[in-house]
Image (tube, rainbow, N blue to C red; front, side, top):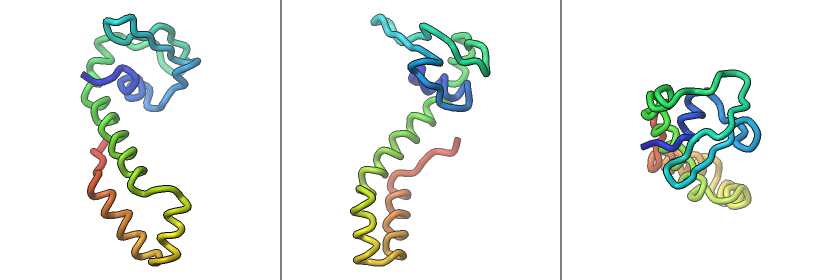
Length: 107
């Protein structure tokens, strides 16, 4: 089951501020929308959110892929050092191999 935050992102087509626009709460039986202050769309129904499960799963999987890529890329300083020592083409090859290792799903 996809996380409600990713379903909301899929519903809105953007990431809302989860501190002011959309407040979620979990009282032990699963997260729910406690407060909806997003003005661009009305609060979604459970059915609307459940219909976005597939898109939410894609968003979750892509977030994991991006996090894995960032770990392997290393810091900006280490990437600059890599470029300085091995050249830009070697860096591009390295980046592409990391992207291939951690592919994103099409959205």
